[in-house]
Image (cartoon, rainbow, N blue to C red; front, side, top):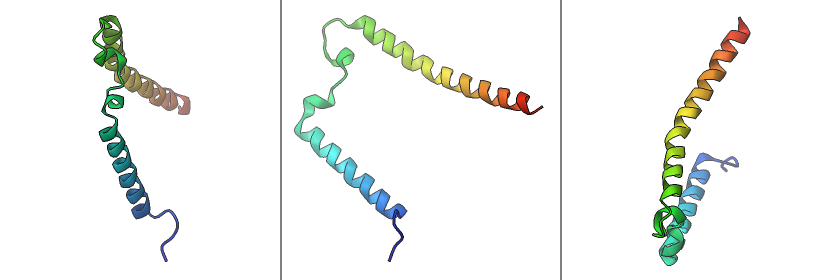
Length: 78
């Protein structure tokens, strides 16, 4: 008898979930293209550029905030 929450069971559940999502996307292809700024074709260039800038700056902000937190923790211990 396997203990509850075995990694194999979780992997099997994730694979089943991925198959369900892929099957739904095959039956509803228009739902897959959910990004209104990319696929609408109605001149939403400003929204497209703003979200592109946001996604470019987000990793920099994340690395900067984690670095700031590590330095702050180091200085607090001294």
